[in-house]
Length: 142
Image (tube, rainbow, N blue to C red; front, side, top):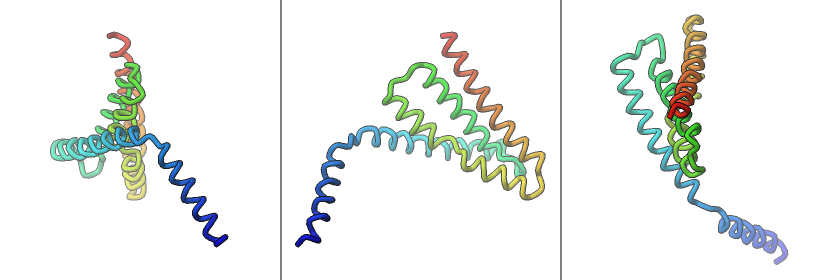
C-alpha cells in the first residue's frame, strides 16, 4: 500500500494545480491562433497567386511585414492584456512565420542563391522594423 501513496499524493497535487489554472487566456490565445493561421493561409495564397516568384519567398515577407505592423499598432495603442493575448500572441503569433522565413532563407543559400538569401533576410528585417515604425508613427499621430 505504501507504493500507491506517493502516486495518490501526486495525482491529488496535479488535480489541485489544474483547478487553479485560468483557462481563459489559453482560449483567447487559441482563438487568436486559429484566426491568424487562417489569415496566414489566405494572404499567402493571395500573394502567391499574384506576386510569388519561384526564386523568392514573397508571401512570407508580406505576412511578416503585415504582422509586424498589426502587432505594432496594438502594442503602441496600449492594448489591454487580453487584447494582447488575442492579437499579439494569438493572431500575430500564428500569422507571422519566423520558421518559414528561416527555412526559406537557408534553402536560398543552400541552392547557391546567396544574394537572394541575404536579400530575403535584409528585406524581412528592414520591412518588419519599418512596419513597426509606421505603426508607432500612426499611433503617435492619432
